Amino acid sequence: MQARELAPTVRSVVDSADESTGRRGLTTPQREALACAVRHGYFEIPRRISLEELAAELGVTHQALSERLRRASDTLAAAELGVDADSSAR
Image 1 (cartoon, rainbow, N blue to C red):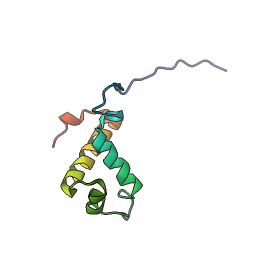
Image 2: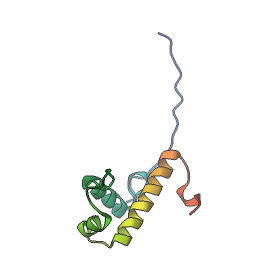
Image 3: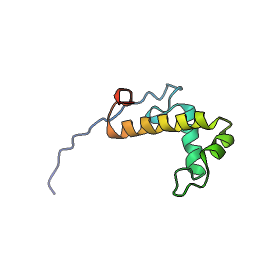
């Protein structure tokens, strides 16, 4: 068997002591909104729950929930793709 050299690549570093953001830079409200959306089938096709119904479940307006989900999606996509979400065109 031939030995191979491995070259690890660090894609992100997260301060686990920072309570304002969790893994991948999500805020607690963003993480909770995403978890609830997944549990209730919001991302399924067809959706099992509407944005308005999901917002009522979380006790927020549908506008606030939409913003949380969009910001969370942007943060996760940027982390996965290795780009800076703050510098993307909006």
